[in-house]
Length: 64
Image (cartoon, rainbow, N blue to C red; front, side):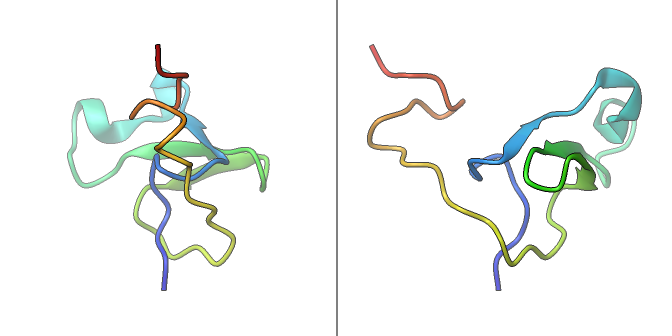
């Protein structure tokens, strides 16, 4: 089973007003481009596609 996290190609940071991670470490919102909605980090996900970390940096940006 896979879980939603920022290593997925569809994951983007949530809008700040929806991210409870600033005040509560038990909830961090992720915007899922595949489902076009915000989801909770670490929820089960069948569609997760791991980023290719060989070509991109840890934050998803291209390596220099």
